[in-house]
Length: 286
Image (tube, rainbow, N blue to C red; front, side, top):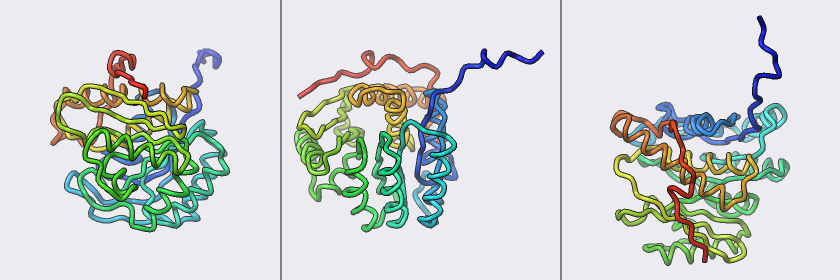
């Protein structure tokens, strides 16, 4: 007997992720797809670069021509009908220019993860790409999600403490008129991680949550940005979507730590349960 089609729940419109491959499955588009599965959203993928990388670093990067990146993106937009876009490693200026033009036409929420290097080391963004990431692409995004080293590369100066991170984030958010969410994993190795969301209005929101033992796990930045894009795709406001993404990464980290050691795990696992953000994150507005 064939089941009634009306009894099959339809999945919500998902996220279009543009970035690079990782043969180990730990980071990049693999992490994006895994995160989509974890939050219950479909993920369409566009390959901008093919990497040879592992926990030892990046061995090689093969660049996909800009016109091929654009053709993939247009096909995914027309067929998958995503509700948000996440942009990760692009590899070349041609890809960055193509993606910048695409997101402007698409008119969807955009999360830009300005990937400059792999977690284990190795550049994924030459100088020409960095310039486009921090100017044209940033200004066409809804939110940019640098870690502390990426923020320092953006502003051209060190941000050694929380106060300087907040000031730098506030400055670049005002400059590109785009929200900037600085991930706090590179902060002090104490018991608390502080992520900073700076809005173009000048408001700064801090997300304080426990620093969990274990790791390091690859693909945490990819996972966070895709979870954030999923929240925007579902219609969440930016402040709430960031809190949900923090809670998701926290749950994925703990699942990975309990499952096996970092040495045998390429990236974050899909968590079985994600707690409500208020059980994990303390939000402070300034």
